[in-house]
View 1: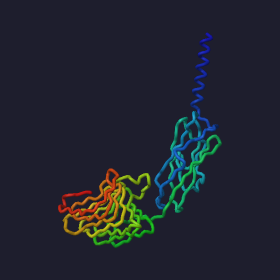
View 2: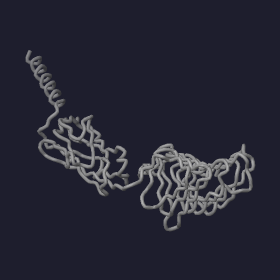
View 3: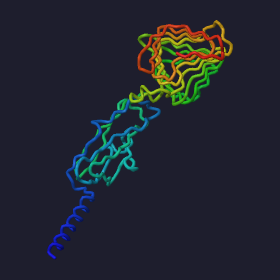
Length: 316
């Protein structure tokens, strides 16, 4: 009988201990661990705001805890927004089990300031911990109407953000100055029926890239479509330019190939593209240009591509 009573007491004690281990406590001295020392956003453009980034919060202790409050230090005046377990900007009574973690999602509000900073505050057991946030912002020109029926010149004063496909109509000349940045939304591209003149220099090359060219995505291919030269477009020139992240960097299509040169590509670099240069009929002169191949090896190209059959395609 005594043995039975002892077993019952032990079982009850174990049950109580199990229940207690499942409880979430707020009065604790647990110190949270973070996935890094700070969340840095790559340079973003003021008119667009940012993509969402995140960091993780870890409870490495043997206790189930309640984080009483998660908030931004600057509150409603913060240049950032946060979301924790579906609670926006301020989260209360957030449960975090032992040896578990949670995501804190962060985005940057549209802001004209150049340097943006704040921190996320965590209240655990009346003790505050802080996780810093930082972003750099640039002003830019957002371009929506992108069918050009008149000559246009792109300067180097601010980056241009193209949210739609660009079409350069027949008999229209588009000129791009040295140091200009032309950035394109996902899956957008440039169709040239007229004339494109890109006048970069060794000191100030022209950049063509996706408008979300964050460092983490820098080497991602297929972010935008690239350039397509069609019809009777000829005497185009791209000099000292960097074209990155495209599906096809440059596509030249000529329905009736002739001795005319559709494009001269000189001292330029095509990086992180699915295809660098494809010619379907027509002539393209490549002068001292760099192509990054699938093995991440840079190749210097000096070659004239002349495809006399409009039904044939040659790619480099």
